[in-house]
Image 1 (tube, rainbow, N blue to C red):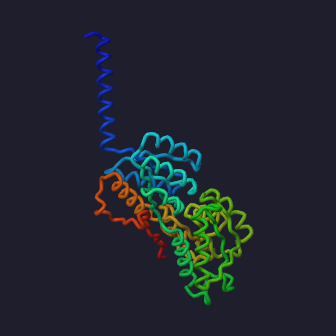
Image 2 (image 1 turned 135 degrees about the vertical axis):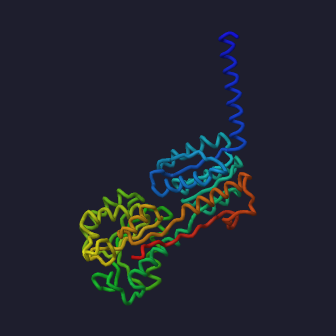
Image 3 (image 1 turned 120 degrees about the vertical axis):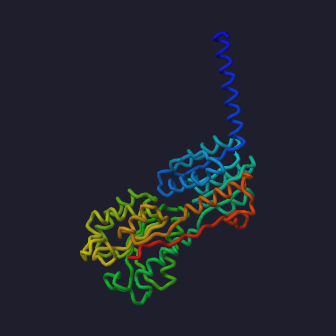
Length: 345
């Protein structure tokens, strides 16, 4: 056999094997896109990891990171949609952008599962094969308030020693995730509404927007402590990342000292101030165990990941709907409850 014929044979064999491989992938691993608003967000990074791990036996998603740019996410979605995927799983940068995405999914007949940032109900209603997996933001703010009220003694008329100036009020700093963001607005509103409904008087010393970002919360906490260090009795954060940033600055300025000399940081230390977050990051759990972060409200990403994978399997025809563990409400929603988490010390 001549060299040219040998090369031709190799090329043909390679092409055949590639075609077989592609046929196998199209049959066994349907095309599924996993679109993230920003993988730099610690919660989203962990969430995506859990989806990838849980999906292994069912399908293998292709992951896209928009880097907090709706323009980039639009381009990523367009690039996949022209290849007619079997399913898309979307964590939108801007929930309002979901309208155009759902229109395109409907036109192409492609199912879509949204998570973490809930599209408008009217937009989800555009396409019968669109779903949302998440938690109700109202619940997170309500549970934060419950943790704080429990710490302060549970009786609004008789606050305990955490009311350091003994004025019957709780002086608080609030770190807000993002101006106009659905979850940030609801979490902030509900934590304050819950205090008011229970008769607790909370005086908001400052409300700062830190865009869900640890470093930004750290930077903004410095000036806040200069202004309010001697007055603040509580820090409420819309997420754990900002809470951890606030704690870093608080520690840097001399707070959270072992003043009772019992060998650990705890709630009886003179300069201990309660800080509460939301998400349940592993680092937040570690901070709680070390005595710095008072508590968090777990946004149960693992259960959500399991629900997303189960729903995906049903839509792809790999899982019998009668075997589902996560019920779909109103044909569209799977809700996973938040859970409070604190240290017992």
